[in-house]
Image (tube, rainbow, N blue to C red; front, side):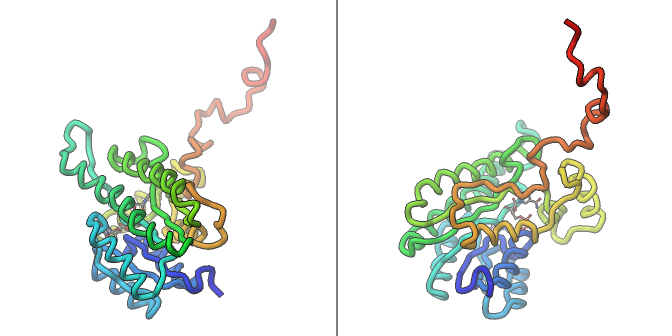
Length: 277
Ligand SMILES: NC(=O)c1ccc[n+]([C@@H]2O[C@H](COP(=O)([O-])OP(=O)(O)OC[C@H]3O[C@@H](n4cnc5c(N)ncnc54)[C@H](O)[C@@H]3O)[C@@H](O)[C@H]2O)c1
């Protein structure tokens, strides 16, 4: 028996990285999943590898008609919609504030925040009728603390966190739970480069980003997928309005090993003795 037996889900950005790992895990746990992504070839390939339990639909998550169409597809195909996972994303605008073009500002917020708004907006009426549902979004550790990612990416992800809390407060009385996941650095094409990351890029991420995480390593897509599975399942039946950090400790603070030497070394006189009166 799987945790999601008989359930249905849409996973945006499901053709790659965190989304693809979640598609696989949800299907393994009994769900039927619609993969909604722009990458047609990868999405079709993944769906085909999972048989009848998965299907692919080419969707641009910045377009309202395509997001609502994806939700209609799940309902007409499988009769209900138990989970929407708003996960599609990209790095957004890069560089200093003074040279960031307004067009890139718009595009960044469209892909990272408007898409989440659209997923929530169109899931709500269906889930309200069912009086049940789980809406999950991928925010980021960068949405909780500044200095981890480009300006606009960080702000858009902070927006996802706040939208999650706000919408959870509206939809809770209908039995709909709304949560987001804040990953630390995860080895995916987004973090290490497209189309297929080169081995040295993966190695550089593993070494450099690892140092900022208490666990001294970066994360794997499957580790985020397991958090999404928990939030989608009845195991999280009393959890809503949360930004769940699955981040190897990166938002907890500076790892002990990176503190200045004098703070890590026991020093009875300086640290433990009060000054003489
Ligand atoms: N990898 C990390 O370190 C990390 C950390 C924190 C948060 N995240 C977030 O996790 C989510 C998944 O990213 P990932 O790391 O798996 O990257 P990824 O590049 O492997 O997957 C992202 C997917 O989103 C799809 N996508 C992008 N724009 C789209 C659009 N307009 N319409 C439909 N699909 C679109 C891409 O085609 C791709 O398949 C993103 O929201 C990202 O911001 C990633």
